[in-house]
Image (cartoon, rainbow, N blue to C red; front, side, top):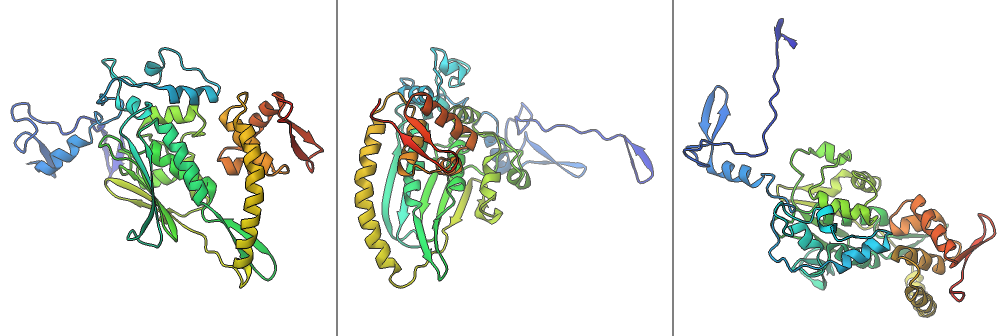
Length: 384
């Protein structure tokens, strides 16, 4: 009950139904059968609005769409689960909601299968426009988790460290913040609208990177709620699996993490797409610095490449460690004095997760600590 204009009134709130447009059975979903309230009158609904409302029905979810092929295998997904310390049993497809109500593989299962027709493109241009394409990499046709990791690794390589030499100091910075960049890539994969078979797109320009995913804001989520971190997963099946595999830490944390480094103007919304644009950090070097950097980079790259290649090869050949533990060990091999925070930032995980991985590596006998907080790590590959 409320008081309005000096009168006591009773306000009734009616929830909106999910199966729009509601229509007269006799005329079906036509302008004769669908109406919209305008003031006190009920006017015929335009056909375009009828089609748009019908397209937004909850039936358009990857869990309810039957996969075009049913001869699916999931070896890659099972390996990723094993590396994360989980085991998928015989009923994994049902438990992970990869089946329709009739027991057939749904489109979520199709995206996570070893083989599919999903293509993910990472394009690189020489300038600031799309006129001069210099590199095009295609990922996909495989488990979506594997494609996600490949895109993360590819863009991490492109996120090179530039040096700015000033009169007082030598400053180093990546083109884009690695934590925000990783969150944006994963968000594009998890929240993409796959119902029209459109995949995320990644484009690298001379001055920026653009990450575009299909589907605007999820139904029932405003821009303000989006930026505040309210989570309305478009694909809850994918979100659950990405969370199991530690690609996603918690619901709703991705956008606030990105906003710590980039403003709201970096997000562009349309009816059918969401685009994130991150401008590259401006870099400059004094005369002579560029030549010295090239020479030093070449010499250091050759030496470091040999050493790093040997260490990395031995680590990769080690079966006792999970993939994430190998990544941690490689970072330590490159910098024995590296901190938990630096490892967390490089891998896009929190420090507590880093601590768990390092504890596991130490317990397996691959790592020991020499000295206190100012000490360093020692890798024991020869003992294993």
